[in-house]
Image 1 (cartoon, rainbow, N blue to C red):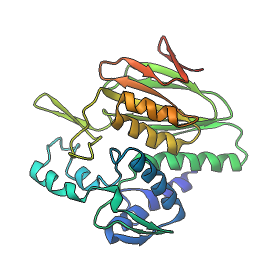
Image 2: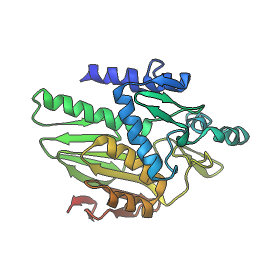
Image 3: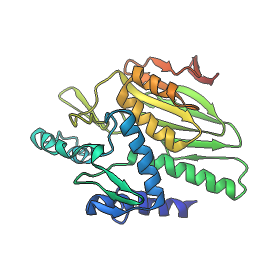
Length: 266
């Protein structure tokens, strides 16, 4: 399992110089692996479905932000690079990809994809039950697994849930953020402005069979907001979501109930 993780990190990791994603961004035209193609097509499906509100070509804008040093970007430069953002630039012919002078960021799906692959490997090697936990992506099989979900910007447990033969993915504005002059800046960016999205949500948790699908759906729902996010979840068979508002209120999709801090599947 650890060997598989190292292998996936090499050819899918965003910081790996030898990864498919790094080569694709560097060369613009590149022949990608079947795994990368599968991830790319899934992400592009949601780019199209949201009309570009979720856009994997936001990399030029993302690169202007440094959440570790907690400094604001040069806003003139940020605006200048936005012309390169646009998923419609990407051209795919079989495994050949032409990015047409943009760069892709697949962080919103890669971790979930690897989670699915690890669980599949374990099952093929006769594991009867277990859990794979990559932090924001979790998948349990064979037996029920209890999860504790923290309140945003806190170590306090606000929700618990049990999953069995299901995955869970979390997208939260407190994963990467800083405050400047009393204003919060987080890592989930608006594809039109390159600035952090501003809506009523602080966290989204998505449940379903595929960890990759949960991974990308949690990010997409965070970007869309509660109302549009719930509509998307309703249209996506087999997936449910919890929406945590910035005032810490909890809202759930139709297939879930929220009772006294517990998330229950109907």
